[in-house]
Amino acid sequence: MENTIKKILALGLREESLAKLLPLLEKVTFQKGHMLFKAGRIERSVYFIEQGIARAFCYKEDKEINFWIGSESNILLSYNSFFLNKAGYENIELLENAVLYKVSDSVLMDLYQTDLEFANWGRKLAESELIKLEESFISRQFKTAKECYEDFIRSSPDILQRVQLGHIASYLGISQVTLSRIRAEIK
Amino acid sequence: MENTIKKILALGLREESLAKLLPLLEKVTFQKGHMLFKAGRIERSVYFIEQGIARAFCYKEDKEINFWIGSESNILLSYNSFFLNKAGYENIELLENAVLYKVSDSVLMDLYQTDLEFANWGRKLAESELIKLEESFISRQFKTAKECYEDFIRSSPDILQRVQLGHIASYLGISQVTLSRIRAEIK
DNA sequence: GACAAAATTTTACAATTGTTAAAAAATAGA
DNA sequence: TCTATTTTTTAACAATTGTAAAATTTTGTC
Image (tube, rainbow over all chains, first blue to last red; front, side):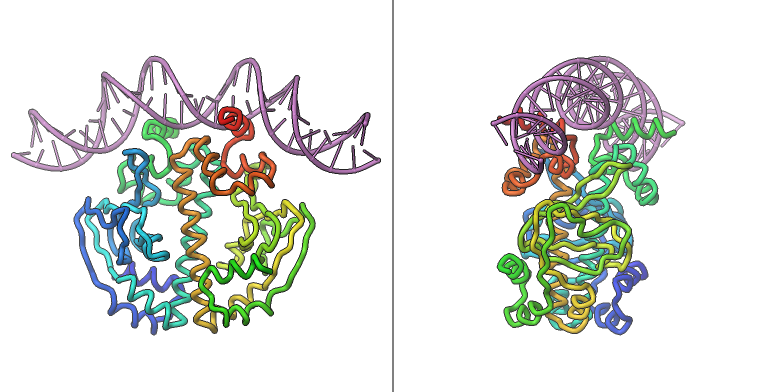
């Protein structure tokens, strides 16, 4: 569970507290294509990606729009479910056979409410996601499709190799045709 | 300091803890046009907007790009500075004469490190900003300029009245000309 | 290796948005 | 109130991106 531990420690938890959390994690595996979360449900689990890639998407009319793609050392959760106890808007699909570590939201919330270090760990988790998302948001604000794709190549070269281009185009907010054009132009 | 207190309590702090925080806040006022934060500095203060409107922007070549606009009951901080102790990327300008309540980052961090309730309050602060930002991010992903503007009218009618359209166009990621066209079409 | 299915690229055309510049309207100061 | 300045709108044209459909390439399976 190397990737999972790396992620947990990166958010500033001490080894002593890590030892408190690890027994609460359950190892689970899923096949490629499995729908881990579905929109409209309150999702009661949080997952650490040990191995694999996932995408989060929602629907615009009946077209799927990816708004997140993540691989090893990322965390999977439904923001609405976990933060607000409301039905989620995320559909999350595994794009490869995956190994995850699962923990229930109530276990995590209990740690937050009783352990100062975990409460700060949870704060840093949200803060680190927030800062990453804001940087993406700003980039998208003023970058051309081509610049967004070049950024993606730079920041996520492994995902580019492992995920089909249609998903990446959707994630970048452009049509697959536009992505193809950009790729032809760059070569 | 009604708006500030409302914001603090909305994040789940008990009245008892509020009483601990309030004496640490300093009331400050600034003129319209004041640059509260500048990119490249490590900003050591966090502000609650009691009265006024602010925008956060960065530069693309030498053009300003707004990525955030907020008014009463919002919080002003530099994510990089406060979360990571790194130089910020935010330029924050006050768009009206403003009344703010100021607290130093070290005071807040000290509360986070010593008080479980404040640590969870800080967690919820980051979580609530994260969920709002993700919803904006997703909307932008697949909405037309017109839909983005209509969303803005719905979600922030007061800001629309109080901020010049050039700032709103920039925030929506469209040119002012496009915004004018949309407005002409809607009428 | 051959076939079927899925993914990607290409083409042609349409729609949207951006840029530049000018006109009109609104606002701020004297 | 009048002028100067700023903001907003409009116009003309160019560039970018989207859509639909076909062609090509890749992948998976027998």
